Amino acid sequence: MPAPVASPRPKKPASAAARTKAVTAPKVGFVSLGCPKALVDSERILTQLRAEGYQTVPSYSAADVVVVNTCGFIDSAVEESLDAIGEALNENGKVIVTGCLGAKSGLIRDKFPEVLSITGPQDYKGVMDAVHLAVPPQHDPFMDLLPPQGIKLTPKHYAYLKIAEGCNHKCSFCIIPSMRGRLDSRPVDSVLIEAEKLVKSGVQELLVISQDTSAYGADLKYAKKTWQGREYQTRMLDLCRGLGSLGAWVRLHYVYPYPHVDEIIALMAEGLILPYLDVPFQHASPKVLKAMKRPAAAENTLKRLAAWRAICPDITVRSTFIVGFPGETEADFEELLDWLDQAQLDRVGCFKYSPVEGATANLLAGAVPEEVKEERLARFMHKQARISAARLKAKVGRTLEVLIDEITQDGAVGRSAADAPEIDGKVYIAGKLKPMPGQRVQVKISRADTHDLHGKLVS
Figure 1 (cartoon, rainbow, N blue to C red):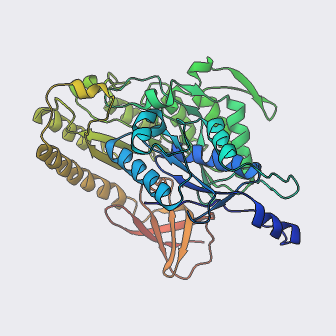
Figure 2: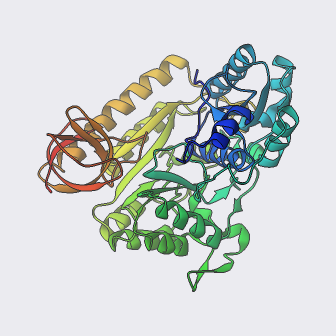
């Protein structure tokens, strides 16, 4: 179970006043669980805590109160969140719960009636109100310094940029709309101002996230805003144009394969944003997709992929899939395997279907036995591993731009445009090197394995 995380404090002279402040500042432990969208929620709460004079600490024993930002999407995430709450109560005793599992407050309150407060996702005010009650703030505007970009839990050379909350889709296996609400896009100028601050602070990679990035701005009727003297619509295309002007890598996640995405691929071909798309296809069988109630289920995804590659041959496409969905037959699964052969995706994750409390898929007939799910998952991953390895091998001999993540005894570890942090592969660079984390370098690829590339620094 993760211990509380501590946000880094800005460097400043260790004056007597500062030493006194360090002793008297109220201290908060923080446990952050879940997806990148939840991580951004944690960063916003930590930023507000810092702005109000709170100090974050890395241990339960040092904290006056502990905040646990939970995940509640699947059963394993619920269990992890409940375990984290229980551990925080045992180790500290004063616990505030927020996040997706907070939408099921009865479940938490039944198991842990002693928690101080329970709020749902994005309820930053509710969290701060609970913190104020537990540990009143002692704000000193002369001492509580806040970096312009806010508090970040990622390495300082990349950051997640959340452009919207919620989702309008009603996928039968998902309960996110019930936890995070309907689509709620941020105005485009707000997003671009945040991105500009991040890049000025040293961020080299912006990872754009939401529940449905393709739908960005639809709820605001694509409202026009002004940034840097130019008019932008609150829509995916204009957002990408603005982000691409900042000079950092821009990586798009959670993009559905709608026709208007073709316009974004053209920006990739121009080099304005990274040639990378994270597209949650989930399955290939029309029957299964219909049962899942997936958006864009009627799209011919193979034709869409071919069109994207025609526009931008270097595009990397990653996706996630579910096997063993209720009603999935062997024929449906074989159709998925055939689709993989034709699609030739670069990066893929796959999960066995598991019921989620409150999801309408729980009512579907045709539950797939657990042993069949296991067997299909193994077959799926075996096939995709061969595809991924072949696509990586095709990069041997090429020179790629690589963003350095860390320096090791053997050289350096970074990522290419094809690799998102945490979920994709890495580029291992051999030799005695002097690049620093966050630096972009040219690397000639000498070999590839199933997931990663290996090479040497060119310049």
